[in-house]
Structures are given as structure tokens and as C-alpha cells.
Length: 239
Image 1: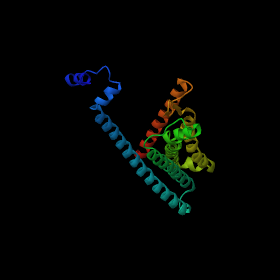
Image 2 (image 1 turned 135 degrees about the vertical axis):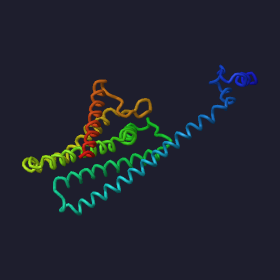
Image 3 (image 1 turned 180 degrees about the vertical axis):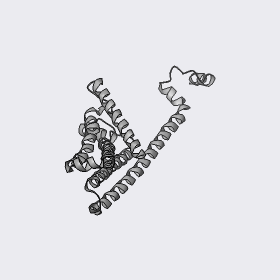
Image 4 (image 1 turned 180 degrees about the horizontal axis):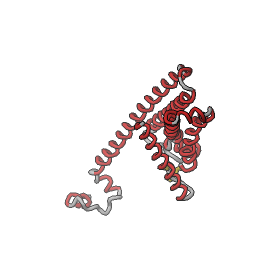
């Protein structure tokens, strides 16, 4: 045993030949505190992120619920079209906040990690809905699309007021309400259901595609959507 300890004292950069043996495991205790510290620091950072996420989502629930309540009580004082679109926007925000809170709370309770491999249905549910956050992501994407719809509606009503009064119909408001939800489902929920899988005990979100072409097209669509959203937000701030 003295021969096994002496090389590590004389040359700290040399790895003993029996580093993976039981004897080396017992005697080599220098690396353990570093590993424990790193794991502990990572665990603390994840806990902090989850707590901050829960606070943000709970705040979102309160704010969106309050806005919905105010809009419902004062629905007769606002224009019909914009009132419906803003109420729909608040509903999407409430939806995203509720499922975001659910995901954060469940993830916080699974601090030690979820062991995949026990039940296929339970594993897929946890992977897709919790770790993959499919429902919350659907609400977030729908919110972005809803903001774009409201911006376009306000733009045409203000800048092209005559054409808006002449051509705008009630069915356009219904389309404006449905489009964000459909877009959120198509951009996030459906791809998440079919491409989020458990591989070697790990949940791979949007990582299992039939071919590279489909994955590339999906990423390009998301990039275009985010770019259009940023441009819309910029135009909203300017106008």
C-alpha cells in the first residue's frame, strides 16, 4: 500500500495504474471534495433557477387573471375586435403561466432526477410534458403569435382606417383568435410529441427526427418566427 501512495505524493500529475481499483478508490480521497463541491454548486444553481421560474410564472398567473377579470367586467366599454384579441392574449399568457408553474413545481420536486425505464407511459409523460415542457412552450409561442396579430390589427385600424372600416369583418377576429393557438400547436406541441424521446435513460427534447431535413426545416421555421416576432415588437415600439 505504501508503494501505491508514494507515486501520488512525488508526482501529482501522474495517474497511478490502479486508479480504477478498489485500493486506489480508498486511498485517493483528494478528488472527492472537488467533485462534491461541483455537484453541490450545480444543484444550488438549478434550485435557484427553479425558484425564480416559479416566482415569475406565479406572477404571470396573477397578472393575466387580473387582466382577464377587468376585461370581462368592462367588455361593453371596449371595441369588440380588439377586446376579444386582448382577452385571448391574456388567456394564452394565463395558460402558459399555469403549465409553466406546473412544470417548475414538478421539476423542483424531482430534484434527485427521474429514473426512466420503469413505466413507458409514465416515462413518456414526464419526458414530453415536464422535461420537454410541451404544453408551456405551446402557450409561449401562441403568445408571440397573438401579439403579432394584435399589432397587425392595430396597424391597419390606425394607419389604414378607411380600408379597415370598409373591409374588416367579424370572422377576421375569429381567425385572429384561432391562429395563435394553431400556430403554437403546429410549431411546438406536435413536433414535441413526435421528436421528444427517451434515449439511454435521458430525455432528448426535439432531438429524434426521422431525417436531418425535417429537423433543419423545423429550426428554420422557428428562426423565421422569432425574427418576425422581433420585427413586430420593434415596429410596435416605434409606432
